Length: 243
Ligand code: FPP
Image (tube, rainbow, N blue to C red; front, side):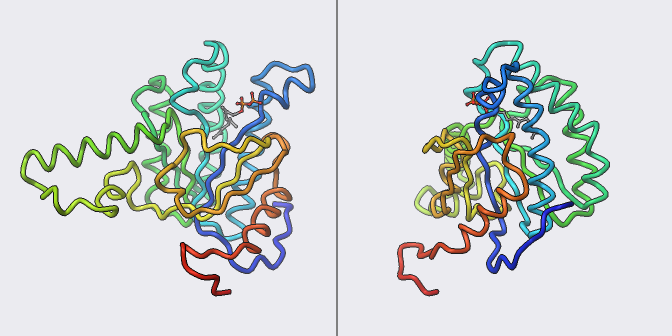
């Protein structure tokens, strides 16, 4: 771990990242898109280490959206293979470093061998951990909220739940990972000013940090810069600045 952690002051306990720009990074170099994803996987490792060192408890990465299935077959297959390879290569390191792996999204749509690998690591890493890496895979936030609504409606129809008691907390409790606190910081690389159907409910009060840097170039230094920027923002939750 090379990155020096300056005095960061207030560190967010949960950081979410839209890892964008792998394709453009590759194109700039005349390389196939998958090379951008491969280099992006190195950024995942670097940012994971930096986040752990800074004391961030939860890191959520948007690795594959429900919309990404319409990408060319080669790219989808390449990404799935890369994820499997990444797990094979680094899962032991995760366990040693007390990093728990969790997945949010339609895990049932993933190739069976990848699903198997994910389930093994998720199970092993859930026993003794200090930090959590959440990978959003075949994830869409509107779908997540719709599924929560369906689960709540089912409970109301069966009499398990009184519809009049449904409030924000009820919805939050029916999302994919109800025990995980909301992210306080969202980082998006490669300059786009969009949420792209990512954690729409959970990001309600998050600080947004957008950088022009492509994800494969986003490493320890860039992550620490984002934490510093977060530290300089006053968070009000609709009230007045108290700091
Ligand atoms: C967005 O860039 C990136 C993705 C859709 C995939 C992200 C996946 C990785 C970084 C692979 C490794 C992940 C893990 C968790 C090990 P883009 O392809 O949309 O780039 P573009 O907008 O420049 O075309």
